[in-house]
Length: 168
Image 1 (cartoon, rainbow, N blue to C red):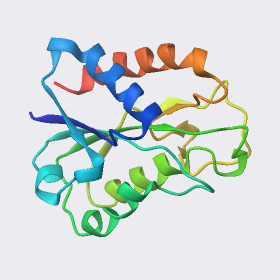
Image 2 (image 1 turned 90 degrees about the horizontal axis):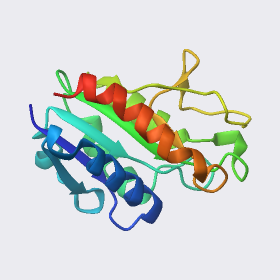
Image 3 (image 1 turned 90 degrees about the vertical axis):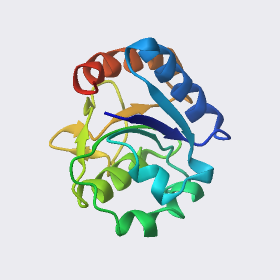
């Protein structure tokens, strides 16, 4: 199984979280690190397992590098691929669309046949609404570096404990 983690190298907080994920996997999983700003369809489809980093921008939008890749993703067959998503969001500044980017990306890929893995609890967050929630869970790992930075390491560690059982 080939595995990649894809995030924007210029999105500082997302990149820092991505590096923590890479470091945590260490030698247990060969993980290719790919810059989302320069992503091509062939590269994206070359992997069986994907970890995608997506911050939520403005009022619940995908960042430009993912948004510009959406038309390509809409044409993809993702059957047989496992996808885990982590996202950064601000529950105080944007409580009405907290972590929407995670939900947008998860549903888009799931609708194309991907298996979305790595759901997490919504406990210990305070917000009004989120497109990242389904069946009472986030569709990935949600980190709030603006308001709960001290909780991020534990949240990443717990998420990776589950992912390490799924990604081989």
